[in-house]
Length: 120
Length: 113
Image 1 (tube, rainbow over the protein chains, first blue to last red):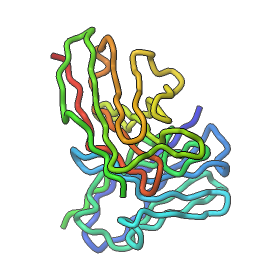
Image 2 (image 1 turned 45 degrees about the horizontal axis):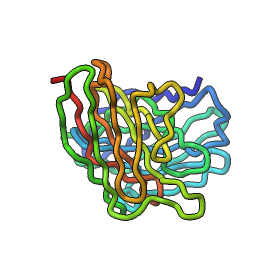
Image 3 (image 1 turned 30 degrees about the vertical axis):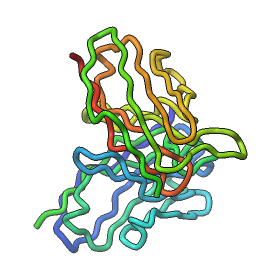
Image 4 (image 1 turned 180 degrees about the vertical axis):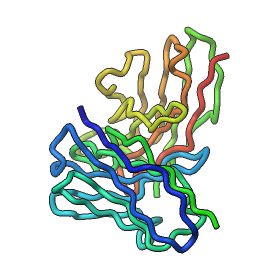
């Protein structure tokens, strides 16, 4: 059974850094892209970017490029989403999701989500 | 970016009746080389992540009840929920996976009348 287990909720101040994680199991981790998705309250999901764990290749949405970093550690089947300087507007629910084979954006299994709150 | 627009924003349907949700893309998501529509539907229940229901416009994922039907092509798509059940109360999203950044619609909330 495919499972994606994300790290717990975070509360941070503007300007602080943060790295959240997503541990995968139940499939061959290095064979599939993993995406990170933002969902703000009452809105649809937004695809942020993807990482290919086999070689750590990444691709980003232009909306998020330069503000977040996505990475992977294949030795522990874990991907990460990182901010170096958080803004209040980063407050949202963040999901990791396994990307369906042969696509970059079709998301067939999702983590439970990590709530990030940024407030002074 | 391809803009995905869903209608209506919400609808209330009686148990056992049919719910119909529309999704329109600002440009075609039909890939000519494989003649497949790069359009997916997700269901999101309160407090849960989205769940993939339908891919390629009309292909139901494993375990999805056959009362969920996806149809359409090019830029106009429909999700039909026949014989609505109480457990179908959710927000439904369409998504194009044709081009970056895999944009989603704004969602349609389905409730019981």
